[in-house]
Length: 112
Length: 113
Figure (cartoon, rainbow over the protein chains, first blue to last red):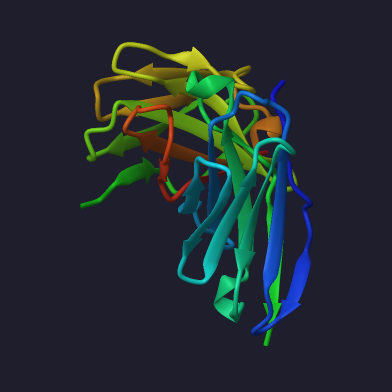
């Protein structure tokens, strides 16, 4: 079973701080990595994707990928209460021949 | 543009009853999926359809059947509901290029008593 691991949280950060969310995966052949945000009672929505080692920035969000260490992270700068949600890491295992595998999610709480 | 539409939004069943969850997408996507989400368990794949005419089991297929009716529609059937199937069910679709970038429906909250 290809695994994707995340700390369940909750991760609490003060408003304006940097939130750091981490994810590790077991399949070395994984090529594509995604972060989904899920507000309570809502469906997941894609916020970031990353395919190459290094950083990818989009507004206040930065995804970081290290394939050698098999981890991917999401940084949220200047965290806002509206960022409070569960963040799901998803990995395209088996070289993309099977659907995404999701981690269990990390619940983030941004305290005003 | 509606995206992915799921019905019903809420359903209560008694043990042993059957029901079908409906899903339709209007994005001309090739691939469609059914996930269930339980507290602390994340999203687990029940079945998926990589293209019209094909279906495959996911991580937790027992107790479920699916039908890919056409390119737009993918239904999930519970033949004899059990309390363990109490969950939130999400349908999703993608353009089929590597199963990436899923678009989710709004979910169905199912309770089996």
